[in-house]
Amino acid sequence: MDLEKLERILLQVQKPGRYIGGELNSVVKDPSQVDIRFCMCFPDVYEIGMSHLGIQILYDMFNRREDTWCERVYSPWTDMDELMRKEGLPLFTLESRTPVKEMDFLGITIQYEMCYTNILQILDLSGIPLKARERGGDCPIVIGGGPCTYNPEPIAEFFDLFYIGEGETQYDALLDLYKEVRSSGGSRNAFLERAAEIPGIYVPAFYDVEYREDGTIRSMTPNNPHAPEKVVKQIVTDMTEVSYPEKPLVPFLKVTQDRVVLEIQRGCTRGCRFCQAGMVYRPARERDIEDLKEYAAKLLENTGHDEISLSSLSSSDYSHLKELVYFLIDRFRCKDVNISLPSLRIDAFSLDVMSRVQDVKKSSLTFAPEAGSQRMRDVINKGLTEEDILTGAAEAFKGGWNKVKLYFMLGLPTETEEDIRGIASLANEVAKVYYDTVPKEKRQGRVQVNSSTSFFIPKPFTPFQWASMFTREEYLEKAHMVNDAMKSQLNHKSLRYNWHDADTSVLEGVLARGDRRVGAVILEAYRRGCLYDSWSECFDSRKWMEAFQSQGVDIGFYNLRERSLDEIFPWDFIDAGVTKEFLKREWERAEKETVTPNCRAQCQGCGARKFGGGVCFEGQS
Image (cartoon, rainbow, N blue to C red; front, side, top):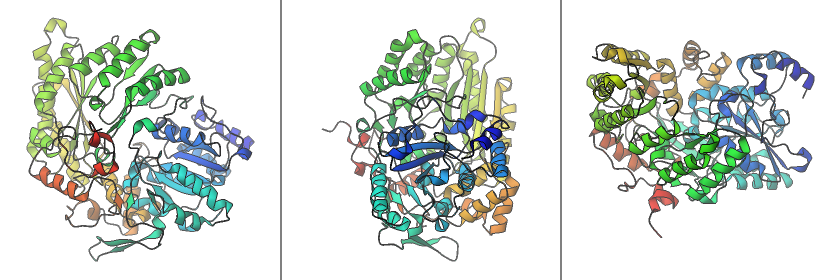
């Protein structure tokens, strides 16, 4: 690494702190004393990547191995990207400034589809061939992990292998295998063949896909005897068995989640039909409360943070939440530690907690009704009634809050104009509750109800994976309908409304359910200059549309048709626990507007019980 050139470049970029490393709790080892160099990558800007809990967990886990040194890299922002290309400076790790190409592994966590061109940026700036089949023995093994690997096919040709599931289960076996194969003089392909035999590992090159004349998949079959027909996701069945990072990295810069994160559980019992995380992270598994109390104290001591966030898909469903929260409040009151509680259901306990942790300034409360009508909430199995929402709002207003955020989706299956207008009606009812509940003399100004809508995107392994989407114009028409309805409400002066970008929703829909043919579009879009597509100031829809056209890929094929129940999906080779039969039943129940009880109320036979842990076995000895 040319350190003089790097120093000169860093003087010219917006935030050089993104690229210097040396953060509190970062790990530095003697490279001559380790056998494996592993580069962990989050393909977005530093401030986003440093906020990701998964990387903190794996970074800690890998570096506990004496034979492994895990370092990090993030996507250089556009100014740094331009200068690195101009000066011929290769992408480097933060800990040792070693070129990424010299690592044994490059592990990329893939949290959202709109980062796909950033993955190509990482490979390109590292000098690693973009396509896996073009890589030789001088290149690191490129691994993909994270939620997007539940349909890895659009980016399959760019990865040597994918890890399906939770990293604590099989990474040690994978790293041990790498040492074994290398010490015996085995080739890159020999390692991939042996790796394919490890549960949860998917090597795309070892599978062939055939298509029908209508464009749907005819078959996907292994072309290598080492590759299984089904790749089974890997999960931790007992959360008390796995370690948790006690000394997480503390960034120099202000990042998106600038606080200690305490993971209280994994999975969710609610069964919302639109939610991929709620399906693929089944079964729900809790961390032991005594362990959490110990971790909380150590995390705050080892980081200097003054805020702790309880992380889970649905915090309210953690069975010891009240005990944990009151412990944290009492234990750290004298240190002015703030407690952040995302994913809460607004009830009496939640409001009591928030009153105690927001004594000075009451920030806005967030509700996620997802749909404007009760019929639509039954379709998506939200498990939330209008009475629940209004009662929660009333209690919040009595407690002194006067700002509420409401989150909705547009374009859900079976949606009608009445459902769409119901979004404005519900927002108006929430505002009305404020004026009905809070006497004039106690009001602190006008209530503010901020509603926002995103456009629904069907995801793999959800009951809505068969659903069709809409065109950009149709999405905007729906948003404008809500906007007009908001203006006609009695309390319209208290209402604010905004909606998500339609162009990115259309693209995300293709990337979420696409097959291998979409890879050519991603590569072409990158070559045309697409980068940081999840950032509105960088996203260029025109270039993406040109890429689709140049590669002859039809957006409508992926977005504008309802799939037949017998269609083979690009992700059908993955066993995520929830069976296709269960998802079909839920799809049919959605069409009938039938609500399904959550896991703790009644087992629905989704298939996750086979993993042998979590909520499926609660109360059993």
